[in-house]
Amino acid sequence: MTAADGDRDHVQSLERGITVLLAFDAEHPNPTLAELAQLTGFSRPAVRRFLITLERMGYVRGAGGRWSLTPRVLAIGQHYTASHALIELAQPHLLHLAEQTQESASLATLDGDEVVYVARVPVRRIMSINVSVGTRVPAHATSMGRVLLAWAPTEQVDDVLARHPLAAPTPNTVTDVGVLRATLAEVHRQGWSVVSEELETGLLSASAPVRDRSGAVVAALASSTSTGRSTVEQLERDVVPLLVETADRITADLGGTARAS
Amino acid sequence: MTAADGDRDHVQSLERGITVLLAFDAEHPNPTLAELAQLTGFSRPAVRRFLITLERMGYVRGAGGRWSLTPRVLAIGQHYTASHALIELAQPHLLHLAEQTQESASLATLDGDEVVYVARVPVRRIMSINVSVGTRVPAHATSMGRVLLAWAPTEQVDDVLARHPLAAPTPNTVTDVGVLRATLAEVHRQGWSVVSEELETGLLSASAPVRDRSGAVVAALASSTSTGRSTVEQLERDVVPLLVETADRITADLGGTARAS
Image (cartoon, rainbow over all chains, first blue to last red; front, side, top):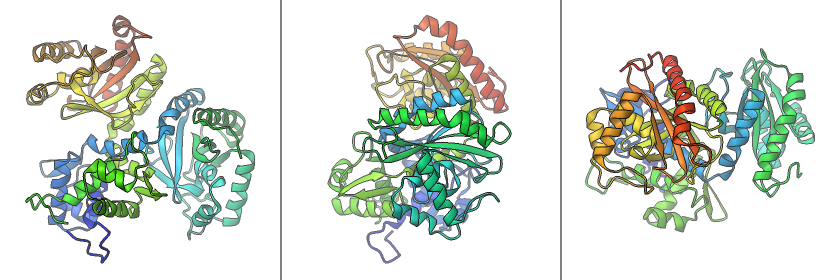
């Protein structure tokens, strides 16, 4: 297979093979070859060759005409986790925060205009989507994203806010760029963010920044709850101080100084 | 790129591209192109084309002549997690077990002759290796592996025990096939396994089986501690009952019946 798009530096079969791997999800945990061809838009013979290759590498398994992912695919993400010391360092702090608050604790980083969960201690399921390590959500609509954007380089913020239209997962989601810029300035000033029902109805979350030794904000620590169990006021009073304290401890473990800039 | 190994169904560039992705790890979090060529054994022009493709897909990032993984690689493993309901169901139970024991709790499945961590609540770091979701360890040397092998099909057990020589990560690791078979029979009879310092010196762990609604053992639940904080006797007396109870609760959530066979 050579790159058909006229770009000799692009390895099309690598991109397509990974696309086949990503076609397996909660809605399609055990697809047939025909279903995979439909999901990816590739021909059945092409999908078959990718499946055979992925099966030999141990990433998929076929039985009775249906295919499924093996736990070996977890190794790919594990290489990210292993190469980012922050994630391992943060784990005991996430657990402690989850115990203190009896709510799920998460650590996330920014990737483009989305926030990616890189570590998580789930206490209970609040969101209707299955949030786990690797899950991506729109940055502007979450407390974690607002913390990360509040300290991000200007060009990155401009780039995120320039997307039209900004996603509005709920009727409460702020998409007005002027209001969002003012909110980011406030988050930067106060050192934390609380967001209520902008990502999902009933979901409340608070977030604080984690810094590396250069003072750069490298992750956001968050605690999530539901409108049935807490309010914005309770979160600000009871959870934000714990959150800031925990984020500062992770920062200290990374060799950084809390609230450096 | 066509398959050069004479097998037209094998997509070599897919395998090689994933190999480049896996060359990033704790020892090489920010390799140069030359280092990646050395690590993978591929030519620099080939590595360069894979990197360009992976960069366009958002999986790697290049800056100042060095490359790193982006959190987007976590999405690949997330598709495994999302397509296996067991993992999400088990999370609150793992957290509860970790709180009760104040020790790390893990869930693992068998993949070939290795055990793969599919969920984990780390309380503190015990092992010298960075254990996270996706980490693989030899099945025969761990309590989780012994639980999974104790209920695995005979052919699978034979296959694992036929490997010569069986890995012996510590001087205590049992590698005698006869002794291992007797141990698996005992684990099957008693319904749990405790292993002391066979995977790593100073590491103690206990494990119990989780079953699906068909009664098949689909995962092992484990609690790990160190010889500095506990003994085999304490683990058997205090932790095993909690572990079996928690594993049975996960089994019930999966629609299964505890200790079905």
